[in-house]
Length: 395
Image 1 (tube, rainbow, N blue to C red):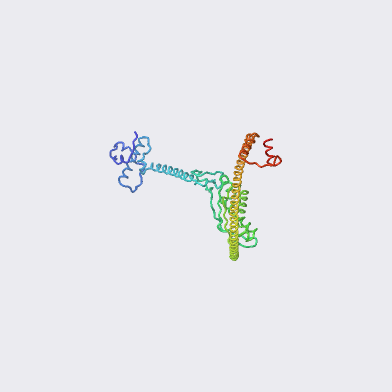
Image 2 (cartoon, rainbow, N blue to C red):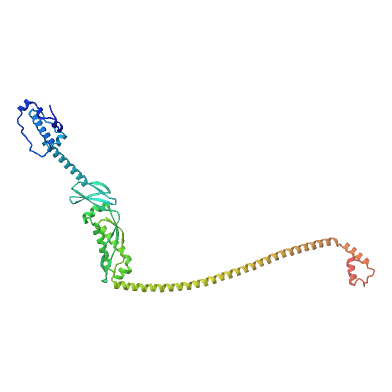
């Protein structure tokens, strides 16, 4: 029969209650723990547990795994519990360390590239949470969003030996994701310095070496940016397979020696005075031209007014003429009408006379007229009156 030995049972099981016959045959205890500094209750429980263990072994009873309480007791079984617990803690610690080392986050605007034993892999990850092989792989974040970079001052010498310094050169660049691994393998993690910033310095110095200080500082200053940008893009295309794009490049005016700067300042002062004089001449000329334009405009206006007045008079005369012509036409038509009426009247009277004054009528009226006169003096048929009577009367 298996018996479980606990701390409570050990405390309440006195040694005197064991079987006296069995106690006479028991051999002496083979193991006695060395004296330790414990409390009285713990020491008593330890002795009771040891005696119970020896009795069970002598009776041939099978051994049972110690429970949690027995593991907490300072016995030999407690050593195994501690060892197992230590192994579990170590394994869990190793797992946690692997999880912590493999877990990493790539921020927005960046991509991740990975190294295994220092060798760059062809793996590129997007923003987000990722895992890698713990204690074997490492990663780096590479920025792919547009980045503004202010370069250090660049010292250059012009064709005529004048030293000048370009400060606050600013460039905005962006990186192509599919070319990062290639550029990092060829030029390292600081590939922008090799492909962009060093090339800008080199091309800027070459431009200054091929031009005079007046061209660099004055006449061709606006051509510097386009020239340098085009040359740098050509270098990136040749060395980096267009892996980097230059979005903007700003090159301020260089710092030149003070005496040359003073001369340029004097030239600018004279140039400003010339501009003022030229502007004054233009102003005077514009005033004269304005006066001329005003006089011409006045003359044109007077001419136009005169033309309008003459045109009005012409129109007035033409109107009077037309009125006179119309009146004449009206008068002519009226006179023609009156003439036609008179003609018609005369014609009708003539027709009436022709019908009225017949020979007999004439003779009758003549006879009547003669009958009213009592005296006639005539000298025969040869006289005028006699001949008239002769024709009328037909005698």
